[in-house]
Length: 114
Length: 113
Image (cartoon, rainbow over the protein chains, first blue to last red):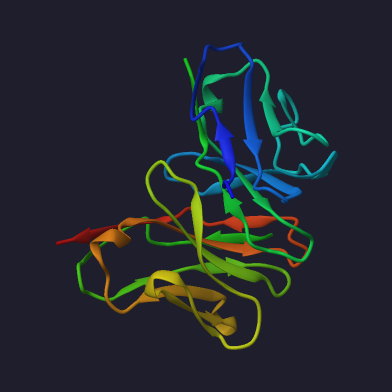
């Protein structure tokens, strides 16, 4: 059973381009979380999704950032018109059900904006 | 407001020595409490969790943590550290509906031979 898969591991973008980060949760997991990690900081909650629904996006910047978790396929975190301040490691985590608290994390995507 | 504080950014201990990593939290209700470990370039792995009951919980790799409600703390301990324990450790609190998990800023552990 593969773990949480994130790709790409490293993503380089120039200012103004779009970044798409993908997360395939563990098999059977229908809950996905996205976190951002900056050096010397902890993980900052961005968004919590269930299949086809955004449950809590209170940690997402109001502009340029969006997330989805379609019925089929991976969850996508999309950043439009990237700026240097978006450079960070983005982690995805998944869990199986409403009564299961255990989070499984992917290895993250390191986004570098030039 | 919910928050998790890990006051020690870096800690260095000698191999074989005991370890205690501090964690304090602020949360409006009784939270779920977690400790995670992160190796370089990797995601986080769950070490242990506390939901209720016995305030001393055991985890993987010989770690344990004690929940102290009066101090709003959930410190992580290990009696004898191994070189392979060198990593970054994160304390987290979770809402009881699991909608959110709040993480501390982490403590980097260095182990001297």
